[in-house]
Length: 334
Image (cartoon, rainbow, N blue to C red; front, side):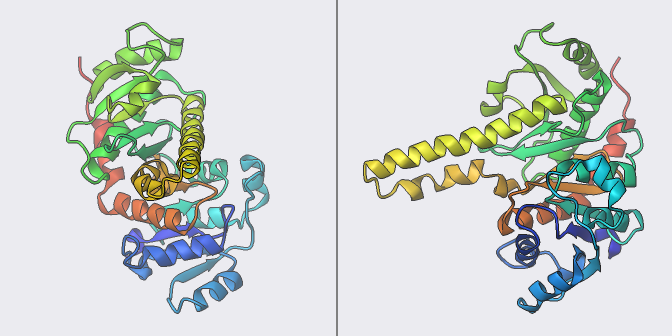
């Protein structure tokens, strides 16, 4: 059972530990993915967590951690200064075999750093990448990397394409059989972009994936690719722009509907809100580390935490990491 267990950083995030515990409870209910409580391990301040669980009358195992890495702290400095941090405890649980996955809503750099250093990378993987999956067009699209590696090498981008394709096939419900992989660029023509992108393109063409060439940012909204590959710096900007602009635009529309007394506006836009709401996809997978790691938004509420736990469970149950190792071993095309 321990290999199927999910270690949850109960203290990380803007709304911790209340939202994290509420999300864990939701994950075990019919409202969430229906996870067995025995699969969960809450890591954090034991007295605070016990008090929150006592109100719910549900038993979830707790592992005490006396320290917390704040959202604004330097990840490298904090990891050294706080050896008993809650995120560090989650990583140690996976490394020791007490769990198979980590879910963290706290400092992204700390989650990436602790996981990469503490767990190491999968066989054949050079650098891990953060993969975010959204359903902007009604069909899932995964973007890799969203911030783990801001200065990658061409071969890293190739592996992001391979790992993203595996994730779409193995873990995503109704995922495509042969995911289309595109390289995010300023134009669809060959020879466009930076030196990094120009060098990565021929490598992607020879990789054992369904590479369709360059795609532009607008293609993310056109269902032009199932996996979009980019460097972590660009990917992080894309993610935050999507989150910020979608909320901004939806707010403007709601304001206009309200001004014109359109009473059905909220209900009509409910599906749209669901498609662009980060809480629906719950978290991002840190692909390439020796363990399943899901990184959630710092503002995550109970619903987002529950969905992130569900994603971690699917990653374990569908064997995403095992599939990545097999994919990395496939020879490139001549």
